[in-house]
Length: 258
Image (cartoon, rainbow, N blue to C red; front, side):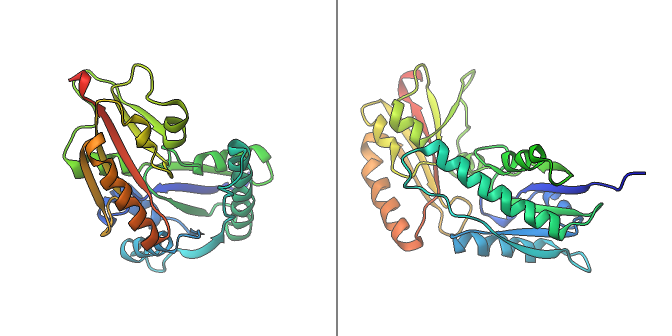
């Protein structure tokens, strides 16, 4: 009989509020042998992840905590796609080494993922890359989590979609490069490092903006984009100086479709 495979779980842990943890996520963390802690340059997020583990892992003895040192992404590279692929390859190398060294056949390990692993996150892609390499055998599952989009709409007390309406999800880079998406009325923007909402200043849209969603540092602004863009600019700059990083998400909603 072949040995049991290693088992890996990608656990969505929500947008930042520990109360966003689902029962499935808590159960997963209490049923693995190892929890892999991904060490990033953002110490705030590393500390928040550690706090989640302390609060919700109640098993005795607890899973082993293994720190995985990850490479930093080159955000100054002119070739965006190549830089992302290189970063993912570096992550895959680090994860492969951790899985091989820390998980025996039949054991399980969890990677904690902010928000939901299926939405603008590379965890699934990295795990698929490891399987494609064929140097380590494992099976994996994904535990969904509350995404920043859900946290955003809940904080603003609005539905994501309008009656019989569609919602387009895009990135700040694509919005800045291509302008308002043709035919769109409601656009969610993620991964915006440079205030791409300014691309839509001439459009008749309202913005529902949030940063550090689900954390004590949460920031919210809503209103006509042309009226509140300056306020968002100031908040983003102040917050970035204070924390050294910013993670924001927003919904742009056209008034012409009302």
